[in-house]
Image (cartoon, rainbow, N blue to C red):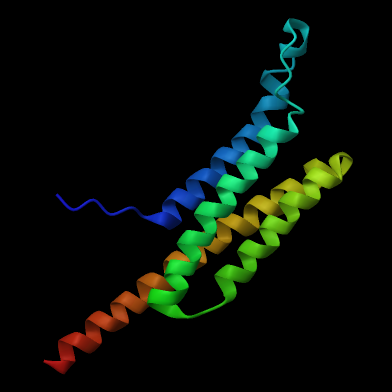
Length: 132
């Protein structure tokens, strides 16, 4: 069995998980400080989530860039989204204004990369068909 991982789908999934984490955690888990548990404002956890999203995103987008389409747009969208995630960490009072644009940019980067890879694959298939 040949298992292939769709890195763009994984990147979108981690971005969505990050968005859910950032949206649901403050609303649902606000009672945790009463029990002495502080995960809402846990900077280590936030930076870990950003690092995981960064690592998966860089791998997925660089693979698509090198092997399929050689277009910089997905990388630029991703870089912008990651910068916004770090900006969100720095300017906490603007977090709810910055976060949607960060997530939208990162998800768009993976979507555009997926579309570029797909178009390159279709073009390659057509070229191989006519080359025979």
